[in-house]
Length: 268
Image (cartoon, rainbow, N blue to C red; front, side, top):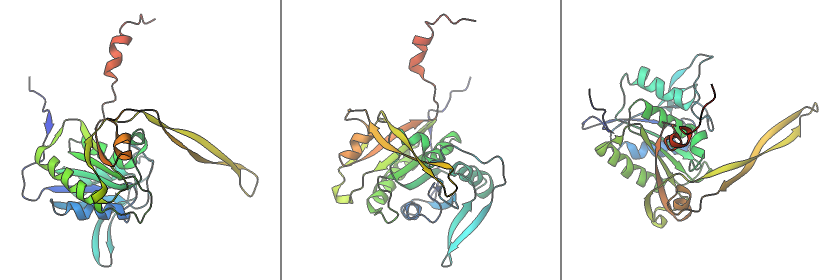
């Protein structure tokens, strides 16, 4: 029986194809910063949502048609905008734009952190996860700053380093990288740390209000709570001035639970 490949490696090429996407939309400053850093490593193709898609997770569009249009700003071709979700963008890019799998997929740079539990909700990370499902070495990049005028210089420096290494070395099968940058100038960042995902969650609240007709509506609010005191987590790295790099699996099987569950005498 054939042995499964353990590492997914990009094809050897002088100019690898790099697919760039995001969830903040094709005109977001973060994706322009990512394109600028990737164009030194290969041929960049952009397929991104035509409007912000934050918090969409791994949603796909199945109940309405998808639109895919070329985008130009001041006569400069930016790429293709898609009317769907970040995951839709990846699927269309592979099947209708490139007609092949790219050598690398990078998603971001997201305006806001996707550390810890945020990886579950993130459209940025779901786009990268879709790439990994397709067997494409994939990375999601996020900056811990929600301001659309944030400084991405430090992100660009480290994104280029990380992408270059993955292009050269590949990724373990079924795995992608979740990279988060602290909101610091390059000279103040202490380096990169390979981390685990912190045990944290959002403590949600719903602010109830009334519309002009007296009908109730709700705004989702809440606070982020980090319950993990370890010094090997993404939250610790970001708080202490490091770029956090977390390897992520899309296989959700809880392998550690088998021993416990196998002891249960299941009623049938």
